[in-house]
Length: 130
Image (tube, rainbow, N blue to C red):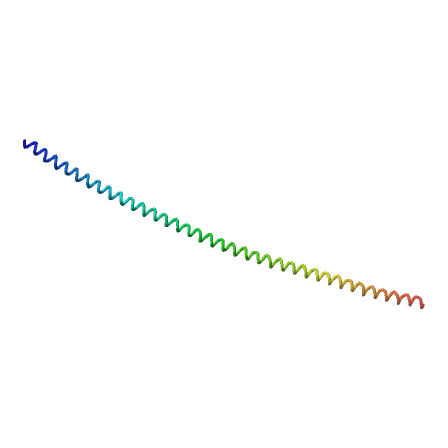
């Protein structure tokens, strides 16, 4: 009988140890599961923060580029207007110079014609007088 009691005592100790180990393992698994959930939530929050930061940087860069393109476009438009105005003024000045040159050439031709006419009249007078 003592053997049975001894065997039952050892069996009850073994069962108690197994039960304690099982409870300890379950508690450990629950703690690890909680830690894993917390880690996953932290990871998701961190990823959301990183995504938000990347989006903000991207918007900042896009806005900066848009402003630079707008500035360059405005400068190009201003330069284009100034060049067009200068070319128009140059063509106008060239037309004025051309008209003045034509007027001056016409005046010179009239003057030369009047001198030639005067010389030919004087020659006719000399021819008639001789």
